[in-house]
Image 1 (cartoon, rainbow, N blue to C red):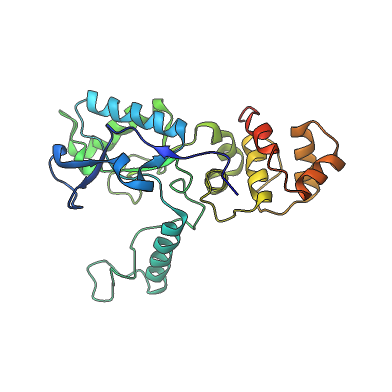
Image 2: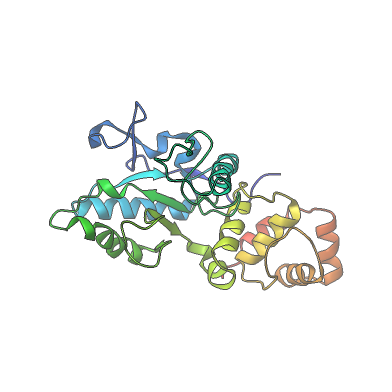
Length: 267
């Protein structure tokens, strides 16, 4: 079943952190465009536009904007989460410890599959060490990035601009899903976004309909892929029909309602 919201390559002018040899930290002219990294360079349309604005703004301020990660396939998320879980089970050994196995462990938090803004095509990880805004102290580079990014709709995942904090590099662009995030929190907003682009932990017709209803501001609670009275009532309201007709459409897995739900204003 096709996803109702497509992903597309980001603007070719946006640099990744990687050279053709796969190394980071090299000269900017040797970097591969983020759009050339396959699915990793994909995003939803509104995020792609916001990313171009952010990249342009950082470059205009004299900084060097490089993205280490953008979209993450849900399969890649599963593998990364497994490594994180292995690290936690091992007692979180330091990466320099003999008990740390880089092949099977990841010493940084990884969200559950389908619960990351990366799966939804709405998040980026920025190469903070490359920013180098002129005239800005090393410990204020992140502050400068926040100053530029937040007015453009980007939300840092951490609360304070601390370069040493885990996930300091992570930024989300919620756009039309900001209402979902404000109502239901980060994890549910990421889940809704991931489902809508076909990279969620749930992929059923029912889950997609619930995600579309959540995007439209309907108070059906957390998306779980299970159709109950609340989902039916919300669908009936959204479609302008009776509960009986809405229930019949959901039972028949009528995908024609996707377009109707997508046409609703995001709330």
